[in-house]
Image (tube, rainbow, N blue to C red; front, side, top):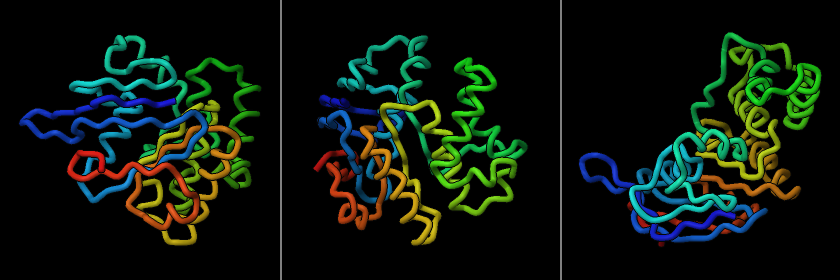
Length: 216
């Protein structure tokens, strides 16, 4: 469960990207953050992912208040998150399989178990036949699916995505949304920031509408 109470993020210079926002996203729910460019969608996702820290208010994710959590504890909290951003931060000098293996290697899984789980994640997103390919050889949609495989390989309880289909054609975007719906159906809490209103019609999520940092 994600609970925000009077959440505010103020950057140097006085810009309040998120202002006095309160909401609840239930465990296993799909939520969509919508709003104009600059509304605060990306900042809100980064706050939930503990990449940014709140200026004031509280943000409780899986029972942990990220606003008061020690910095040293944040890496352990992030293990419960799967993160997907527009710039996928893929490693272009490594294969698709190696990209998905990275979080498992960090978690200390044995090589055998890590490969098995990474291949299962690639299979889920339809990329197992391309496991040896480097990301540069993949299409935009395939690169995004690779980023999703890497995000879910650790079996996160919360999947956070910021504009995951912004640079994709309609067919690829639809396929990506299908993947998020599939994860939601098996109990993963899914939070998507997007300007694409057609998603609301397809998956009927809990909608958080932002306008200049405020929740409508």
